[in-house]
Length: 165
Image (cartoon, rainbow, N blue to C red; front, side):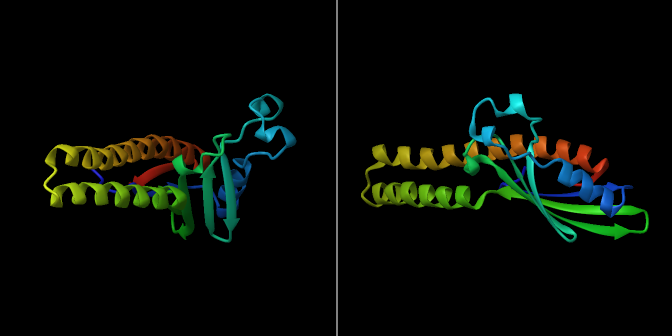
C-alpha cells in the first residue's frame, strides 16, 4: 500500500509522437460561454481533461465542471522515443492547493493534540488525532478513485499498455 498520494506510471504505445500529441489535444475540453453552467455538457461534447503540451512534456488536469481543484489530481508526463514505440512516463499527484490545505489541517490538529497530550488531558486528545487520521484516509480514498479513472482514460488516449505503476 502506498503511503503518499503520488503515483508513477509508465505507458508503452506504438503510436507516433505526433499521434500521441494529437490524441492528447483532442481530449481537451472545449471552452464556451455555457461552461460555467450546470447544463454546459448539453450544448457541447464534454471533454474530461484540460491539457497543456510543451514539446515532449505535457500537463493534464481533469475537468469536473466545478471549481473544486483541491480534489483533482495533477498529471505530468514525458514522451520518449524507444526502439519499439513510445514510452510515456506519467506522474500523478494532488493539486498543490490541496497539499497546502492539508498541511494547515495537520498542523492545526497536531498542535491541539500535542497541547492536550502535554497538558495530560487525555480525554480531549483523541479528537485531534482522529481528525488527522480522517483527513489522511479521505485524501487517499479520493486520490485512488481519481487515479484509477485517470489511468484507464490515459491508457485509452495513448492506446497503450501500462508497463509500470
